[in-house]
Image 1: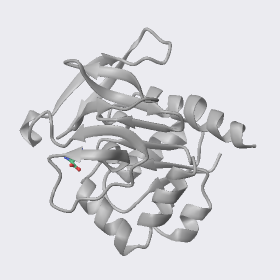
Image 2: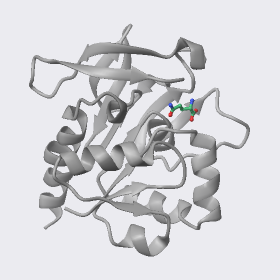
Image 3: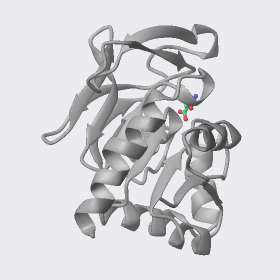
Image 4: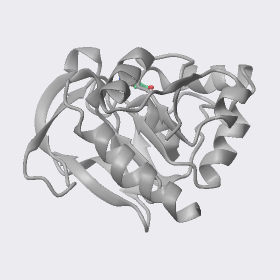
Length: 198
Ligand code: GLN
């Protein structure tokens, strides 16, 4: 499977390392031609406003938006979740998202940088083992639309959600050494979605 990591800003190399550990050799995506060459995309954590602005500057914004709308499997962590959300609360003025995921997210919902935390949480992929989750100025999901499933929660706020070929987490599995979320994305989300279109 050809998986890309959007490489405009944020913790790109951490996602690349985890994907390699999962047996997928990703392409970094900064150009339209690189986007055209991938079947699935990971949007890293970082700063959602900066990633959106750089996507405009690099002429990637509309192409990414339309690939997602056409069903390209995509996984967003933290800022990536914000960029996938149809609606953003506490957004910066004129902040844009690629959208596609029928959720409302609240930016920086858990507090500021100093309120960052790690926690072992349950993730609904059929395993009873907890998953190590790192939250850094993380959003939470305030509302989900029909067709969106909650896979993990903290304090009754969804922090991992899925809608068909789109997966998003408020936290950073790429920083914890726990590869389960990436494996879930590859095996259960992306592979399944790509098999359906074949
Ligand atoms: N608070 C950041 C934003 O709004 C996200 C933080 C992160 O990705 N760790 O984009």
